[in-house]
Image 1: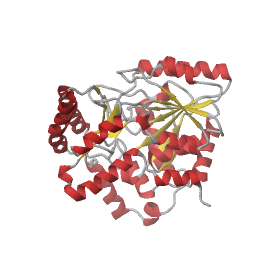
Image 2: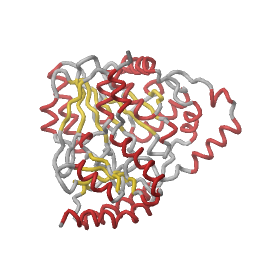
Image 3: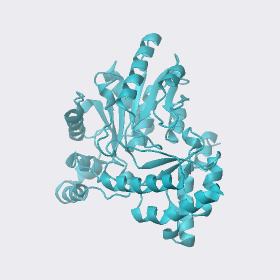
Image 4: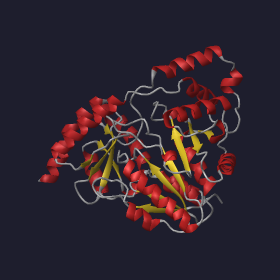
Length: 395
């Protein structure tokens, strides 16, 4: 008999994927231009020009063994060194090539890290709202999910609630900033308060508590907002990074894990990362794109395109009477549903061909997520439908 738990995961997709698949079907029925799909975080900004140039240069000038053959299980050494050098240049973290493990995107980074850290029954704290798949990843590593509720309105971390959720069984905490689904960037004040709590709890319980920084949106921030680099605030930090959003390469599945060299027992934790990658079959991340990343270190997408989308959508929806969380990063708008039940609100929006994601599975009820990483014209075309929906509720 097959594994019933895996069957359950396969037979019911995440709410995001369910809506995304519905959109494709609906677009085939009435035309893509008449469906206002804001379901999935699929970057709409073109990758930097350096990416295409790097691919062409590599394919035309490098051997097929380098581009299509196996690398070391943890990734090509020269690629890992290039990434470590960039981290050090930006953040002065003292990372070396042997602190880096190349992965198939952020999902692989997280699943490897959790498998490396968690023993059966140990707890991992997540901050609501959180990416829905955290629960799947943690439970698959035989861990237990503990949800810390946020500060209302701002959706910054409620440090008092966090402190109450940490127990002797707490092994790890996942922090995602800029946050999916809220777009909130956790402030330096919040980071210092969180890490102070973790340091105290490590002493109280006499064992490490690992901080896992999930950072696929690090570069997607607006104005003068900055994202604190967690290794510089807390020694027992693991960074899970993906180039999917920063370089608009979600389908290429390329990222890395960085283990802080200041971490307690850092070398052995890195070996546990290597072992977890081996056990999960996540070895030798895509060779071609390892080399592409090496050649394009420092490249960025134009975040002003996302900022323009955010401003159009945020300003219009707040004018129509929607309550929205002001996002400083990523490409999501977190909107309070116009009734208590976000799923009922979603169904009413769907009648107007607006596809948003109810956020109960993100750990916060009564809200929906709007992914504005879409063509600007889709947002403009959808505004009358959003306005009509608000007017219906006002009646």
